[in-house]
Amino acid sequence: MTWQLAEKFDKFAKFEKFETSDGYVRWAAFGEGDPVVLLHGSPFSSYIWREIAPALARTRKVYVWDLLGFGRSEQRDGQDVGLAAQGRHFARLLAHWGLERPSVVAHDVGGAVALRALLLEGAAYRDLTLVDAVGGGAWGTGYFKLIRDNAHVFERLPGYAHEALVASHLRHATYTGYGPGVLDAYLAPWRGARGQAAFYRQYRQFAQSQTDEIEPLLGEVSVPTRIIWGREDRLLPGEFAAFLRARIPHAELIWLDGAGHTVQEDAPARLLAHLEADFGQAVS
Image 1 (cartoon, rainbow, N blue to C red):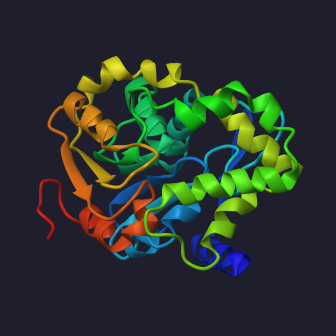
Image 2: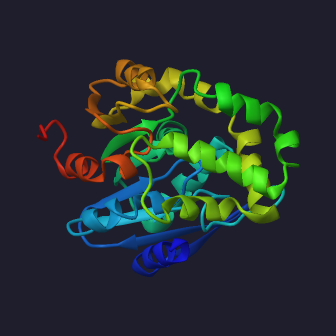
């Protein structure tokens, strides 16, 4: 079931490679119309958009990509997979695609990547949607800080213990639970010695300082912005949504009741309805 789900999305999306200084990232584009780019977070991949992307592609050209070290993208020792590097890669990808002002939808740490590209790397957007996204505040605490500060220990876990840890974290991200095979699909990139090393590499390199840099600049976000948040998010509680709303001028805040951090899993139809609506348009 795991590989059937992943292969179905791969076949639909037809992933290509884009080389960076630290290895290749995989990306895909499909549909026709005004461009929209979807960014995933951690420990996910573009697979999280598997229901949303095809639906948006009915009327728009949709781009997805796997952050370096995630999903289908390259994993290897010595990579810089920090948020600063990911922001630079994203700005270069936009240029590679020839996109001058696409819509951008970003989830989790994908929010920090999108904001860094916009505020520090010269990228330009038509509009920005932040979905349960990292964009500032003390997000690198608790579970995240424990693993980051002790990555050298977690890297040595037996494979079964590592997999149990990642699976537990993934389950905590959803409020309603995953469908058949979905959890396995999320786990697949982090299995084996290479995947395990890559999993803890991101924790070592995702530093709080990389969002501290953009926090004072959030007031300079001038494009239409909306913030969509799962009311039951246990990884990034609602205080982080309020944090972004208070600092990004004219940002619209939309709550999704009965959804956790992975609103793509918990409330895909409602998320899609908001993404298809014009900014400021009420969705029942």
